[in-house]
Length: 286
Image (cartoon, rainbow, N blue to C red; front, side, top):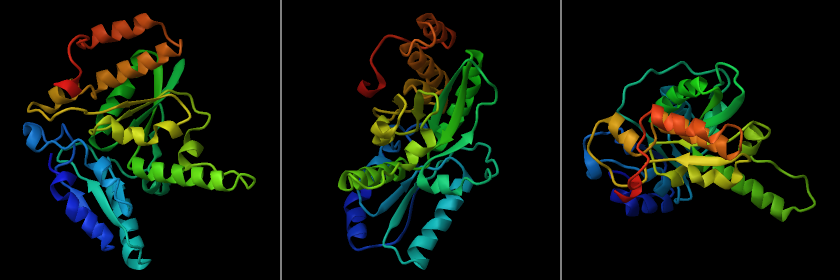
């Protein structure tokens, strides 16, 4: 649980004093610092930091995202003199760091960009949102879904808060200017017209992704690590919290079945294929 709850009063005081700088959550995620149990497994700091008005919250997946965010933060705080500060999650899990795709800087800062289009065409296409270390599970789920004739575009979501704040600002503008030109949120611009549903996964509880649920034009299904931290391997923890690649795959197939785009027995077959337990308490209650 290391994170905001240990320093929350100081965070508010820092924001109220118009402090500037970066807070880096070095023990980020509920499943990444595995083996430590409740004491160290943080599943909610991005949500708690998001309530501080002048705090920018990011959950980057790759080193180039961190670099883009830090550079922009330095520019805003120390070149333009803005009274903001940043909270970034940093994970202690090793995985490949790709080069930055061309032209994604704006998307990193605004909270969303398409990281990888579906590698092959299939009869059905969905959208996968992933943040932080959960990007690796999304990439694996993209591969598994191809086996079920489903293509998946993968989107990196460095900041649900940035997306939410933009959507709220646009909503307010349109409400106060009923006869003026209608504005569109960045999130809507990116997703409008794309096939759904949208499956969102992170190493944090579902309410982090749910910050943008009502602004997503497609059906939106968040997956997250609701519940107490536990001591086990990363693979076991991610299976327990239902955020690993098989659970992402099943969530996507189930959403397609709800829309009558695939038969229900496809979901049943996937549950059996991945040996997913279908009975027992949900992770939040354990």
